[in-house]
Amino acid sequence: MQRRAPLFLFAVTAFTLVACGEEPIVEAEPVLAQDPLLARALNDPLMVDPDLSWRNEANAVIAYRDGHPLPPFNAHAGAADRARDAARIELLENGPIPDLPAASGGEGNPSLAELTNAGDMVEAVGSRTDCIENLTGRLTWSTGLPPTSSIMPHGMVRQAAGVDEGTCVIRVVRYLTPVSREDALEYHFTKADRARFRIERFDAPEMQLRGERRDQVMAVHVRESTGGMTAVDVIHWRK
Image 1 (cartoon, rainbow, N blue to C red):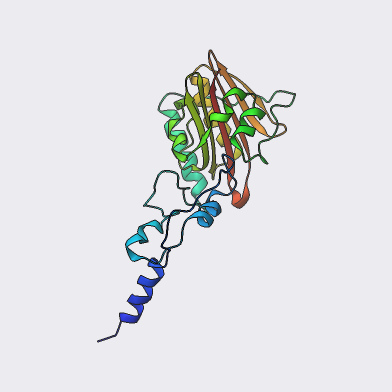
Image 2: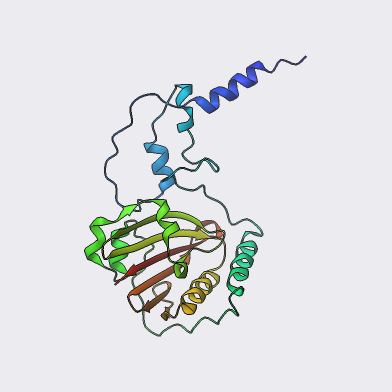
């Protein structure tokens, strides 16, 4: 009979080598801090107590807990096709997909590419600066987006922030998708157009949409990202 105990002990050790001790005091960080996966890895306590080994799952695929970043994925072959098909199937359920409008000749809002703080993003798109101090960063804000601003199928939420206090209602979500920038714009334009938003499109300084309807405003910024992915920023607020 083959001896497998050493291999089993090695596997157990590999999965339980994590830290005992009290919860660390986490200093205040900017909302939408850059690279949430790295931040979580650095801030999560290390443990050696097997009874606390469940904490060693900060970036697990299945054991997702509130506030944990979702695992990254790559734009491998076929990913863009699957995401595009899923988005179009969703859109076609409510009728033909309209053509994207031509871009306006001028420039839109400043690029959001270098911004990592939700407050800075809110200010850059002309949203309500009086609500910025109440913004909180939490991935579950991405599930509270209005249907007109929801993320695309197969989109990976990287960062999210929001506030819902009195008249301050804002959602800020940054996600990645394997589809092209035009496909991402088409998805968000179609949903906003069907909700009767008045929409303007700009191609500079980065591709973006700005929609307005009664007491609501939305801004969608799209740009190329690494690994063949497309980065999308969605800001939706009540006036």
